Amino acid sequence: MTIDGISTPVMEAGPRRGREAVVFVHGNPGSSRDFDSLVAETGRFARAVAFDVPGFGHADDRPGGPYTTQGAARFIDDLAKRLGIRRVHLVVHDFGGPWGLQWGAEHGDRLASVVLIDTGVLIGYYGHPAALVWHTPLAGEVQVATTTRQTFTDFLQWNNPRPLPARFINRMYDDWDRGTRCAMLHYYRDVSNPDAMGRSQAAALRKRSRPALVVWGKQDPYVPESLAAKQKQAFPRAEIHVLPGDGHWPFVDEPRRVRDLVIPFLRRVTRAHP
Image (tube, rainbow, N blue to C red):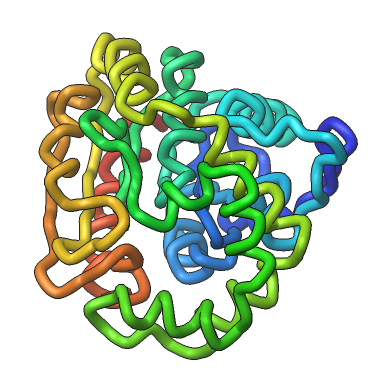
C-alpha cells in the first residue's frame, strides 16, 4: 500500500471491510513481523492490521523526512483512513507507543482501547544509554555505521534476560539497513524530552479513560518496568501485568503468556464495540 508516496507492506487478518480494527504498531528496530502470531490470533474474532512504519522493515524511506513522532502519527491516521478504519484498538511496542499514543491523543474520539507492551506515556523517562548515544550528532552516526551483525546480536543478547531466537535477531538486522539506521537517529532526535511528550499525551488521553492493558517485562533494560504503573496517568482503568524474567520483547520471551493476556483483552474490548 502507498500512503503519501511511501510504500509499506500491510498485514491483515480477519474481516477486511470492518470500520473497527486492531492496529499493531511496532517499534525500533522492529517491523510488522514482530506481531505475526498476535495478528493471526486477533483475526479470528476481529479485523487486525499491522504495517511497517516509514523507514523500518520493508517500508520505503522518507527522502528528507520527516522522521518525527508527529509524522508517524499522521501516517497511522492516513493508513487507517485509506483502509476505511474509523475506530482503532491500538497494540503498540517500544517506539510504537509514542507514535500510536500521539495519534490517540489527537484522535481520542476514534481511539477505542490500547495494549501497551513495554511502552506507553514516557513520564519520568529520559532514555537508555544507547539512546543517549543516538541522540548525539556524529557519535550516533558512527555507532550505527560500525554496528555489525555480530555486535548487533551481542548487544541484544547481552541485555536480554532470556536468549532471543537467532531468527528474530537476524530478521531485525536484515531490515536494519542504511535507510533504517538513518531513520532511527531522526526519530530519536525528534524526541528531545520524552517526559514532556509523555505528560502532554497523558493529559489528552486520560480525558477519555479508554480501556488499557499494560504488559511489561520486569527486566527490560531499555524502558524500565517502573513506567508500567505510570500508564494509569493516561489510562486510569489500565490493567497492569509485569512479567518476571522477561525483557524488552515479552512477546518473544514468553509468546504464550503474552497471548493469554492480550487476546482475551482484545476479545472483550472489540465485543464491547460491535
